[in-house]
Image 1: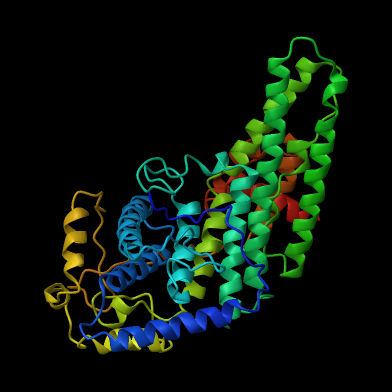
Image 2: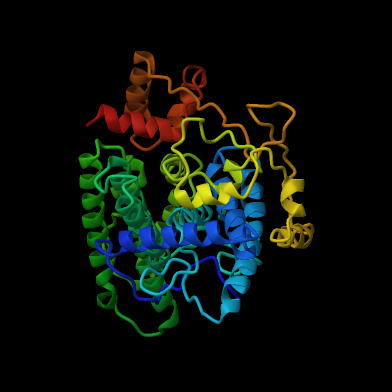
Length: 454
């Protein structure tokens, strides 16, 4: 079964590979020449590639905070998987096996670097946004990612590697700067989650060993202190990365000392109980409604949408097949490859026009085969035309941050004196009338107290 994910075991060039940009340029030039010389317009594989490109664009453009965005991601993921499966079948009819969607050393399945960048962005979005849906990352059929908290360090490393590859392509095509703050910022976010996942897996492994052994000594598990120390080192490194980019990585993305600190016990039973408590606290940390997962999702969504605007627009948007409000009229012109695609289409082409062409009959088959797929229940309207269905939900306005008043600061400090540090719920309840005005939460109080006591 063809997959949306590349095979991880394939060897690849390092991010500094000097040949990648040349290969991308040659491939795009070859595509342009082939399309312009095609007597009958677009081939089935080119039509499918356009559909893949447009669907990836839709996935990137979804507002992560929109209502029912998860079901919308699921619908688009199924659709993208369908297009990828059919595209792979068509592409491999020539007898060439493509082992990797994004392989730079062998012949890639998709050689247009703009499409590959957009497809990789879409996969990053799905990996972190679609965390509880019945869609598979590889097969697009069952269980996508059961829960982000269950991703192990290897899973986070794969996501981090995808980001590095995307940055490589964007840098080599001169879309972004490798040292840009947003690059360092997302890398720090991902490293924070990877470090938490590694520590969690190490502690769970220790708990499993304790549960499976009959005779054991506490001295067998002194490595737990090494695990904790390694995480603290990683935390310091992430904090340093944050300082380089202006402190944009919130400290709340890092496990605090009160979660991971404990006096090494004298009994194995006590150690097991302590580790289980820490693991539970780590799960709560990752799944927090405010931070840190939503902070990462928001940061990733905003950054990828910004980067995607620097790519050539999908051909189906250029020719008017879709209505799009996510790109302004000032978006840079399409590449020569996309221009040649447009040369086969009239400016007023509609979906009916596309369906009438011989080369695009495959589009009708795709529409029929996807008719039984899950469909989003939400209808969105375009900003440019209220009577036209849009491909993206309207973006919600972000809640304006309200500065803390002196009364709130005083009440918090008095509450800590009265109830103790960490008793944020008690402090919140004791000053409900004051904190409820601006809808302050336990996390808000913790964040404020940390800033006040720096």
